[in-house]
Length: 355
Length: 224
Image (cartoon, rainbow over all chains, first blue to last red; front, side):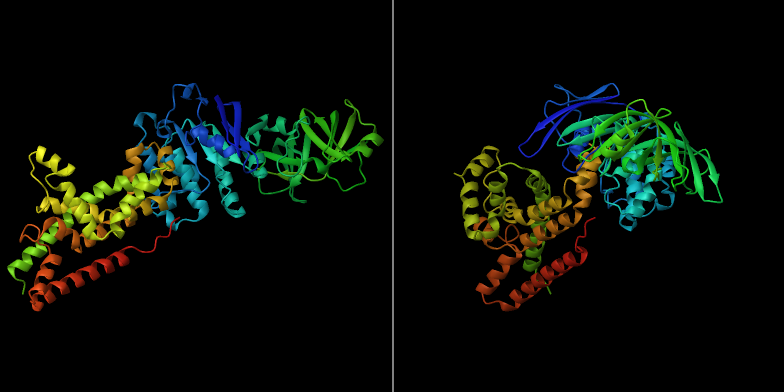
């Protein structure tokens, strides 16, 4: 459990947060630049000194009226946007730098394990100047892990990388998530990273938390439509249930049924996440067979809400317990006489596999 | 080839420059650290004081030091009270004066190196459990090593090359305060051009070699 209360008031910038975050899984601090997410992360690390703040991490107080634990006394790992490896030290010495400073008794992540998790074995004897951007960031992550942190803080670790490098690192971050018990607070403004990694979403705007909660639920809330990117949409979790080799499709089983997606080499049984944008869901009162849409899911109308444009409405659907959000015109909503409780068919035009 | 007098002057000069360089690296580094990182209002005035020897005529600096270290000056009273006598016309006095005179040439390169390094490597080190002193010695110093090299070379060379302050503070005592530059002055005064040539040639070659080595050893810094 992470409890954080910070308040800063400058004319050009304010931070005002009071957060209780789960002490496990991935917490994404999501927002535009200037929303205060990086400042909040730095305040948690102790890199930013916020007077009269309060911070407790898994039962130990790092900051209150009487205490301010300096950064080097906090059992955390920090990954910066730029890898910031020490240029005068080899990869191996970079990894050892933090580890050597941790008492042997509190070392829970071995150097070998960190090296193996991030796949940097072949790089150990190189100097940072000879690494690619993606390799550097993997070393930086391993270096932060090697101090066996009680909590891992990452400040947009992929933002400085191009798409290919991002795709190179994301699987490693997922592995951390799956294999280690270390909670991760992850600052990002990239919807795809958040959709892929986060368990808990904290959305920030102008120094304040505008929404907070489990990612899947929070994205489906209509009272505060939190958007990852331009459009409203939901993230669902499921499992690859079946492969259709003839048509190169894979079926993902989720609470509401099955979703066919393009086959992408994932094996049956693999846990995956998909993202479905509200604009890609249309609603029908009867199942339609004579169109090209592959995924048609039975669902119940739960709630209707206005979209930002007066022509549009958002409809929250319940598909066997999984939330879906559809964006349709208000005219369509009126024509179909949509009401909470109605049984409908969600026609899903596009499903994006996010990880 | 070298007369005893010339050799004595050269050895004295090297001894002075070495001692001054060591002292300056020890004294100048904390000053440079503070100047590179402070947001205090005092940064401006302190920077100006440190830089004064660059623009002041050595005679002016030497004059004030002479007065301060003399029997009635504040420093002189202190050294007398400590039973050390007064500093002018001693080797120790020369060292003190040279430290002031060469201070900016040591502080500024180190300060620039610290500023170029920025805050990030120190933040990283802190997140890897390194305390303040630990960070300084294991991260700040190695990352600023080109600055330290430049500072050491410039401090040493500049001390070797000083003349005015030495005359004001140290006079011209053989084996005690008569450094190479003063020795050359004496030769020229006495029209002994052959000896003046030898020592001047050595100084020229030394200065050029030192600066060349510095520029060769100090490749253009490419950070990141």
